[in-house]
Image 1 (cartoon, helix red, strand yellow):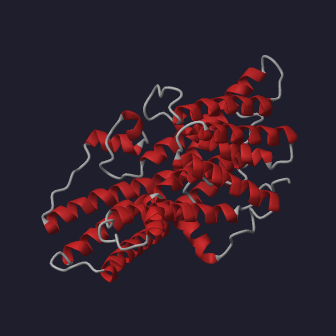
Image 2 (spheres, one colour):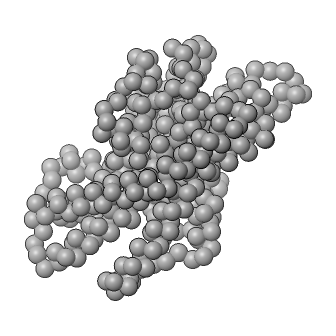
Image 3 (cartoon, rainbow, N blue to C red):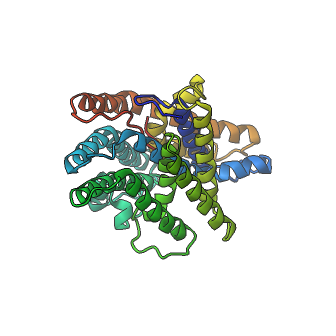
Amino acid sequence: MKLMEGSRFKALDAIRGIAALAVVFFHLYVNLWRELDWLPEPIRLMLNYGYLGVSTFFVLSGFVIAHSTRCEGADFRYMGRFALRRAIRLDPPYWASIVITIVLALLVQRVFQVAQIYPSAESVIAHIFYLQYFLGYPPVISEVYWTLCIEVQLYLFLVLVYVLLNKLKAWRNFDIMRWSLLFMFAIGVISALQTHKAAPELIKGLFLPYWHYFFLGVSAYYALSGVTWMKYLFFAFVGIEVALQAGASLNGYVIVGVASVAVIYGLGLLGWLTTGLAQWPLQYLGKISYSLYLVHSDIGWKAISFGKRLLEDQVITPLLSTLLFLLGLIASLVAAQLLYWIVERPSIKAASKLNKHSAEPYPQDRNIITS
């Protein structure tokens, strides 16, 4: 099938929302795992592995960033415009969540006299530029920000490959798309080997160990474009992922990543990427997923901790533990909605305005956890 330019992938919005909710459930469960020990084992297992939704984010990112960029004619000016648009879209909500987290820590210490760990000035600066994971700063501000460091590297590397191969084309004429995908395929194999400890991780914080999830999405997008050799490339890479998984210890991230791309590819074959999973609760979760991802691990966690503090002299029954979980979830959703209204939505409009004034069209600009 031929993917329509300018189309909105509603099914991917829904999948993004589900993946974000899985991560939220995981972090809330970590704060209540003792109190929720009455839950059936399958449910506790699902909650405990909600963090695996991160690999779904990377797969989604690869698919939609491939849809949002062009290969032919890409140059450093194009890359700069792409980076600027992404910065306008991602930075304000991210920076706002950093401020919210630090302010909340100050309030908790002052009101409840509970000691808090604060990030250093250097750590905050590193966070602002998505360098904290690369530079090895501990996740004092939030446990979830490391994925943004990787995310930024992933799609900048994709565009950089396009740019460099376009530069090489000036010396010798060749099919840029074919060689771009083959090069990214080779990097994907190295990345998958690193995940299975079959290749060394040379630089901590570099995107390379996560590239294969991203490339699953990229190759799925091109496999659905109707070009036969691209389809073969996609199936070959999935085959390598499965073979490595079968020949080594099971890796939950890889299982979820392959399952995610299988669902995306299946929806694409059925023609449901733009129309499937369009129910409003799923679309709503997809819309606020970036804001929800940014704030839940701090606000949801603190809401539960506040509730447990109020109940410290009581036996926490199954009903009370359920109410505490719901308190964390509702606090996370409300905070995400406010962040979306106040910061994220204006950022989306600003990025869209830049797109309209840009000479280069971006059919759709959506990534792992952003709406």
